[in-house]
Structures are given as C-alpha cells and as structure tokens.
Length: 431
Image 1 (cartoon, rainbow, N blue to C red):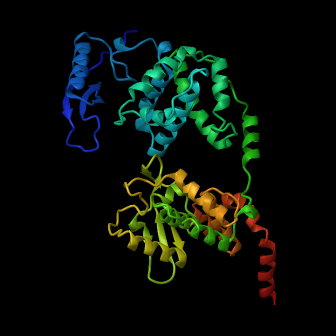
Image 2: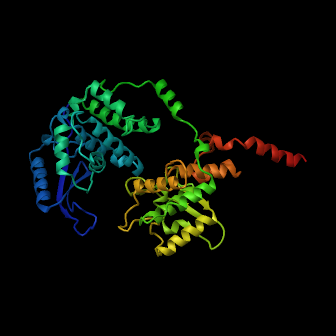
Image 3: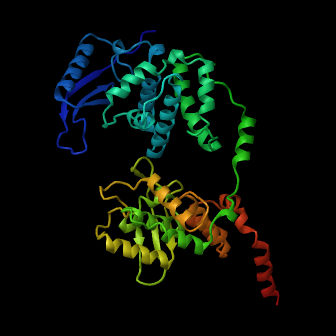
C-alpha cells in the first residue's frame, strides 16, 4: 500500500546570536506534516548548506524519516547505524513525552549502555560517559567533540552487531558499579529498562534480531530486590554530639571548607538530600532572630546543576536554632541579599563539587575519630536522631519526604526502644 504524501516546509535560517546561552546560534527550522523540527549550527555557512540540502530533497520528492526528521535518502541502512547514533534518535523521539527528571535519568542510562557497548578491546577515552550524557541529548547546544565522535564511529558497534552474546555481556555489566561491585537493584533495573527499550525499538524497526536481549526471571528479580532492601544500620551512625563535632571539623584552610560545613549542617539538621541542599535559595530559608526556623524545599539538582522538583515532591522542614544561626551568619557573611540567589555556590558561581564535599566530610570524620560515612548518611543520622527523640512517625516521614511504611522499613533499628517508651506512657495514664 502506498504511503501517504508528506507536506514538508523549510523556513529561513534563524539568527540567535543575541541569546547569550546559544552556543549554536544559527538555527534551521522546518516542518514535516505540521510537526516542527530544527537543527542548530555554529556558523551561518553550515546552516545555509544544511537548509539547501533540505530544499533539494523536497524538490526531488524524497520522503523524510519521522524519527530523525531528515530525508530517508541520507540514511544508512538501520542495521549499519551505530548504537550511539541510534540512542540519539530514540531519545529525540521520546523527549517531548518526558518530564525533566525522566529525561535526565534516561540519558544517563543510555550513556552507560553505549559506553559498555563499545568493543571490549578498545580503551575508552577519559570522560567518554560524561560527554555522552550531554551529547546524546537532542538539541544539545554543547557541541560535539570531534575527537570523541570519531572514536565512537570506529569503536561503537552497529545495531546489526548486537547479537545475543554481546547483549548478555552488556546486561550483566549494567548491574555493576565502576569498581565492579554490585549496583543497587532498583538502580540497575532502571538502567536496564531504558537500555532495553531503546534496543526493543531497533528490534521493531527490523535492525536487530527479535530475541537478542535475554529474558530475566521475574521471580529472580523479586528475590534480588528483597535481598538488597536492608534497613539502615543506625548503630554505625554518630550521635548528635559527634555529628556536631564532625561538622565543625570540616573547616580547614581550604577556601571551600566553610561552604561544605554549612551544607553538611543543612543535610544533618534538616534531613535534606544532597541534591536538595545544593538548590536551596535565599528565599527558601525562614530564619527568625530566635527559636526555630524553616526551609521550603521546592527544588533539587536533577542533572548537573539543572533545577527540578525534589524526588518526593516539595515539603516544608522545620530547622532547629543551631542551624538557623548558622544560616543567618552564612547569608550575612556572603552578602546574599537577592532572594532568588542560591545559597551555596563556588567563587566561579558554579555548583560545589560533590566529590570535594565528600572528601571534606571524610577528612573531618577521620580527624574526630569517626568511621567514614557518605554525605547522604547525614540524612539517615537526622532521621535516627528524630526518632530516638520520640518524634511521631508521621511527622518524621513528612520532614524526610517519605511514607511511614518506607520510614519504618528503613530505620527499624532506631525504633528498638518503642516498646519501652510505649509502656512508660501507658503507665503514666493508668496511674
């Protein structure tokens, strides 16, 4: 059956040089059956050449591919398309349907998948996966690294190369961290779902064998999740006095140490995730002269300094006087008068480095004789402190952004004294 006719319109080149953020300021726009498409270029010459080729394809009556938006005559057979190029196409097709957090998660998953897909004998260049995280995103204005793109063209397999043996090896390694240790089951499953969906799309297009991805046992997957869902070992977490001492010990001669001290204090005293700490703004903090204050948690870092909604939605968190005083001093010392200004930035106005933050925290813990713990564990320490102080489960869960069920299963060790406390309260009523 004949395919329906297409209506393709090619517009003039748009000049976006007045936009400071536009690193690819020359934009060619066109529509295919009313659906808008665009491609950006660094120079006017490149844009004019691309537009001319589009006009020639329209004049020749050629069809345009609905996925890539380019003439079908420009394309190589699907089986010969490199995996990284297919990942770009697939992401572009799904992009408009996804929320920002889903886009970031899917791009991260495919960057990992593509990195693992390259020939095992080829040593991947430094920074390849970080580069792919940006370069795979559609409409990326960061520009492509010619050196890395050439390396990928030589070493990345085609869709036709994705046989069952290669995919089985990739599937296994998708569940491992960079150091070879097993990844958290939920994280590995999320990455596999995205990678498999992109390959499934290639299967449906006829470029990959239908049975290439090995079937995973659902029963086995459930057992694996059950094994890895362990509660936090509250016995390994420092108490309030030890946490306060370690937080103060972060400050050294390093310029950023004061920043990391206040950030860690927020993570502990407010129970915030690190991704939420780095996106707090001046207007987020309600800091009275006396007593308790409040942090309005409405943003989180979802993708390399890109703000988005927190993982479990916005919430309002009361903060104790010790943190109120610390934040008041921080805002005054750094002259943070603009309400929309982020509280924590480097001297170059960039987000503080997560790795430097972790190193500063580890040094401080070691200096006061405490065992190593992650920055994220400050949130666990906060929850444990609140529960042991007798805070109701529902209120603790609300402040953390959890359900009560998740709270109880995660911090069950902090509830060991609940029976004794309950007995005392009943005794006081019974007289």
